[in-house]
Length: 448
Image (cartoon, rainbow, N blue to C red; front, side, top):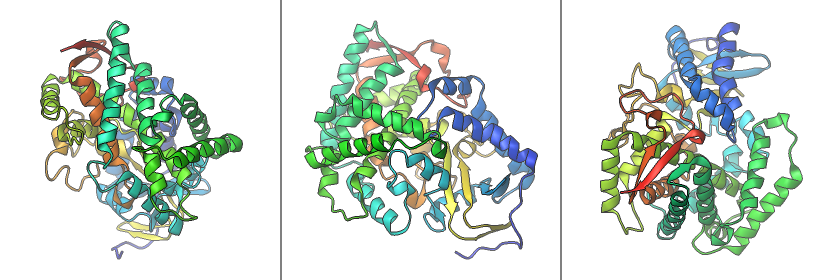
């Protein structure tokens, strides 16, 4: 794409500014865990408002350098920080060429459990693996064709969870929620026979923990081989009404590597559970929005193909306020031209989602819970709100995730009231915190 540009390279941050970005942006996000979260660090990051500090750091650089990517002074590595919404949209829209999704650090992390996944592939192999993901996950369908199977799974598991909550004196915390969520995910992805396959989930967690360290951690090759063989077994079983059955049905070739695509489906559903729990907290703290949610739930009761736009908007707003993928990475495959200079090929490009999601210089309700933002025809316009990334690299499972998460919210809230414990954990009268640790949320649950 032809672009006007000035001669020479992009502006480069000073060494001090680069160290500040490393300290305020990179270190907290890496410490929290880029592949699997470290709960204690997440709780500490919330208390210290580290995500707010990261946003302020990038705003400060934007004020100094203006529009255009900013190169960071990283020894032996070309790295650029995106400061402008138009540039963020360009990077996302022009993926995978010249901005590949298979960024170097991302490849080293995901290689621990899904080395041949579409997200870290390029060229012909990426195109084939992306096609497979889109067909199985029905990327362009707002409501997945298996919704009449998936929604009852969610309802059954939610009812079992609520029974456990009642026996626990009406208290619900993250550990209890995630146990149920994992069962839902296994049943949706692999089939009912996987409902109790906790070992599979634990194995993936071990591989993801190694992935947190990227190339610094030796790959657990044998464990990964057994894990992928287990997934292939579920594909071979092709239990009706599961994504595994869809994976067995969709045509493949030698490049597809179906078992390498499935870990991402399992992996990505955990952040979806985090967003669901956070959305429950938001609705608990905003009584007027909770009433809107219950009215929508009542209208769709018994509907096995629900398209609950308000609940989906609440989940999207949860992901805007607290993105589960705060660092969106791309890698340039060739020299590119920008208004303020040229970017070298093989540059790692960083888009900090919270910087755009919480930019209170431009977004009136940057720090408020505003689900209506997602219900307006124009949405946020051209502003890069990217809960599921964007452009050709957008998450192919976004509609499925919103189906399952909204069904979970509906199942929980249908006949029960959730109150945060303590009640001042979130207050509608106050700006929403820069980060909310799902691991430290507690609810008191009672029947309506």
